[in-house]
Amino acid sequence: MVQIVFYLFILLTLGSAFGVLLTRNVLYAAFFLLLTLLGVAGLFVLAGADFLAVSQIMIYVGGVLVLIIFGVMLTHTKDAGQTDFTRPNYVLTRHRGWLWALVVAGGIFSVLYSALVRANFVLFGREPFFESTVDTIGRQLMTEFVVPFEIAGVLLLVALIGASTLAASSRPDR
Amino acid sequence: MEPINSGIYLLIGAALFSIGLAVVVLKRHAIMVLMGIELMLNAVNLNLIAFSQYDPDRLQGQMFSLFVMIVAAAEAAIALAIILQVYRHFRTVQLDEVNELRK
Image 1 (cartoon, rainbow over the protein chains, first blue to last red):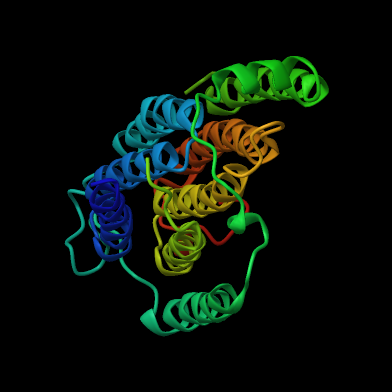
Image 2: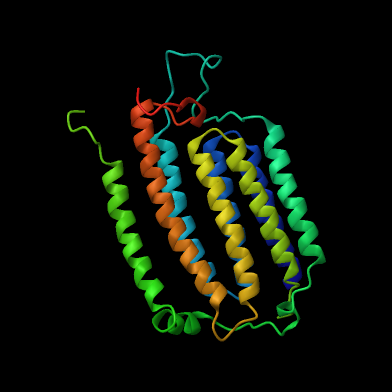
């Protein structure tokens, strides 16, 4: 049963990731990315990382993806004066050549695949652990990882200020 | 709950990373490139969590992937702000047409 759900989540993740790769419409790609992120969250649950799955859904689906969709809509123009032959329609993105992307990505995947299939990790021989990780994560955040935690807070503040400063109109006369 | 072979997680991570890389190389739209980067970050998180399952006392992999998520959120916000400014300046976000610093 768990195995079937696991393979369904794999299928969802990789299938919609291929959808992001293959579609030419940026908005469709955003929705395929939503499916991919949900599939990854499901894989997180099956790997025993419940807190990370919930924060994956909250951060990526609730935050980053909404931002991306806003970005798509804010940067979308229909150029009325130009036909589709001279300029692309801006929701549709054109591809650069297929060849180099296939060579680079396929090459990296084949190298990683041949290495990972042959690798024998000692850690995977141990007994896996299925319990709620919220307790441990909370304790770790306040003890061992307290400095990175505070730095992450400062980073988010800086990113917030920086993003709103950058996105604000730089020329007040326009 | 029966255990799942964790090697599969590493293979999914490799596949997701390659797809993200292909999206980054292939697409011309700036937001599509951003989506490819998000896919690659997710693939890395998948690897970290596959290993973290066997480390219940310290959960270092999960902590690290939590910080990766935080940095990814900050990066997406900054990148979209930059893309908005580029769009205001050039009236396009197709990366091949943004080829000069001033216009």
